[in-house]
Length: 401
Image (cartoon, rainbow, N blue to C red; front, side, top):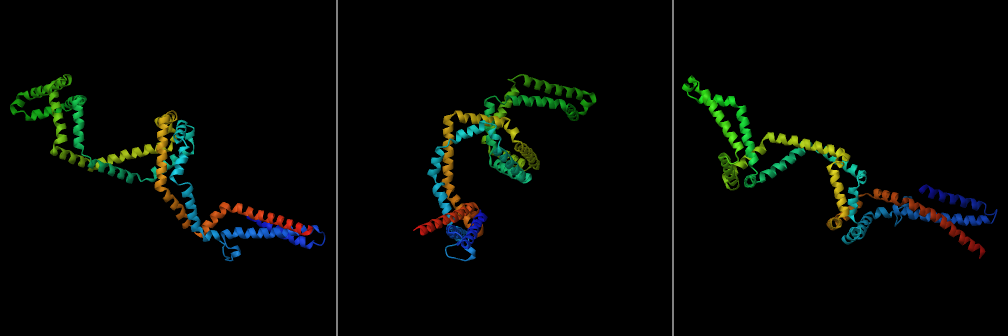
């Protein structure tokens, strides 16, 4: 457009020279000369005005030229004030958001799988993958483990265990645990029968071993233990079960009220947290979690076709059908945005102002000229043509009057 405007000015200059040469040939060339002369004046005047906005015309430091470079800081402040007064005020944002049913729009978007298959979802997927891959797995896993360990160290675990155990005992929900212990004891006894027999033989007297009664004693002990375990497993009212209940109740009480036992539990907890094996176990768990998160992030379609997608669809349907919920969501969103504007609006305004102040004169001149330069060249073209028409009218009036 700059070349078009300049070319039109050059054309008017050529037309002016041609009309001057042919002025005596015909009186009509006088009208052409008046048009071309006034067009050059109008085009040059508008060229000067347009150029003076961004630089000194022909490099000459004429006063009140290069307006944008000289006033860039004031332009930034004015732009920031315009944003603050017309966009970033709480009452304007609140009034605007009252007309917008954000919850309904979100409900329609969530309920429609096709709507969620656009660039937003894939963009979020790429962002999640980039963040997960950028994080150092070992460093981040260590950080998370350290945070969890600190929380665990600050948590008095013994009273919590005591209250949990009390609840289990009072509701007889510990009985499956006792049954499991009985079964485990029976299996352990069967698996280690030879070791038990050897222990009995070693502790039996030499007379018993010489007479062979040590084998009979071992059989009696093993059979007695098996019979006792069978009776405990079969009889819910067995005395050993009652003893176990008493022992668990006492343990629950001590966990909550015994400083000595609580101190032992805390020491055991801290030793467990400091154990390198626990750290290695956690790193393995974290790596599996991270791999699963990466797999889901790389394939958002698979994630949204599963339980997550179904939950989102149900949430979208609920938002569309439940007017009360929509009102609550809209009120929350409105308060959050208005609160954010109230808290950070001045920061956004300062960001605009400081950004413009940080640009050098050449940068802001180039950016503004690129933004509005095309329209400014139309001003030059219009100035050339309108100036020519005005000059023609003046010539006509001068000739005929």
